Amino acid sequence: MGKVTGFLEFEREGAASRAVSERIRDWKEVPLPVDGALLRQQGARCMDCGIPFCHQGCPLGNIIPDWNDLVYRNHWRDAIDALHATNNFPEFTGRLCPAPCEASCVVAIGSEAVSIKLIEKTIIERAWEEGWVVPEPPASETGRSVAVVGSGPAGLACAQQLRRVGHRVTVLERADKVGGLLRYGIPEFKMEKRVLDRRLAQMEAEGIEFKTGVHVGVNLDAATLRAKYDALVLCGGACQARDLPIPGVNSRAYTLHWSTSRRQTGELRENRSPKPRPSAPRGRKSSSLVAETQAPTAWARRTVSIARACTSLRLSLVRPTHARPRIRGRNGTTSFVYPAPTKRAVSVSIRLARRSSSETTAAG
Image (cartoon, rainbow, N blue to C red):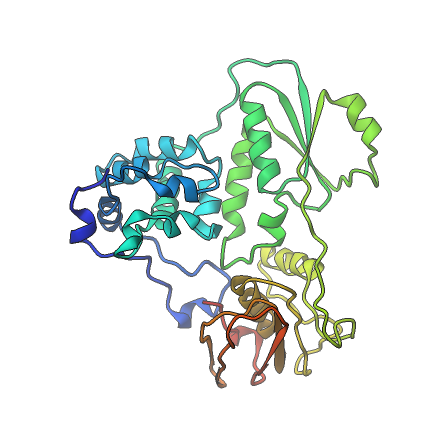
């Protein structure tokens, strides 16, 4: 697969980032598009492994060496077909997946792993640009109906697969917009909502019906669903946060959680800057409690807090990292170092200079 000596000739390269001076003024994604020639080189780094462990590392079982090779040979149309064979939404995973495939890459034994995640994202984005991603309605109808409860990534993938074999599919979502975690849990700079809406438009064109504001068990009982549909698929998410066992967790401190994320996303969707919450007026010393979270989520919360004009921020982490992040702003610089990983809760305090919402700091 790829070029036989590619992993010896080419170094791993990733996507460049937008300038800080530009990205602090909006909520858009940070990475820049990658040139096709660079991606062909990265595809060439894929070895002809006897046992490609990236298959084992990928939860979807993506046939990664195949589309790496197709990119190297400049066969982009075949590459998207190979990618879609195992992945309904590569534009989501290409942005959000932690890439366990790269951790399993054989090249990584003696060098840096193949840029699998970047290649995946570039394949699907080129496919959208070229018009290769089109609705795929079923050739015939089965006459069966299915209700999918929950419109997160699992519910959407399930709905699309069921519809393409001919079933009539209705997706039920309790929120006001479709997408679940993809809409209300992922910050805009990680994945812009236009990416989600683009895929939802394709699914609607395939004949999938979406109903929002339907809370099964609250305003619609299960008996009604079972009587109306031939089958039910439960793809509900877990939205209840777990608080840290630390003093002050139940105080009136400025706390970010699911409902706040939803409100912020709504403001971004309407092209408005997130506003300070009534409990945390502009300039007030505030704190944000982040419960048992991974670093990317913690930084997302930190970014939102800064955007809401807090003068101080407190992160409480169960799984701190070794990274040494640095916050840069027009009104000064603040830096701190996380301690080594530990099972106990670790609190890190950050003092921020008062600033306007236009002078927010983007994560990354």
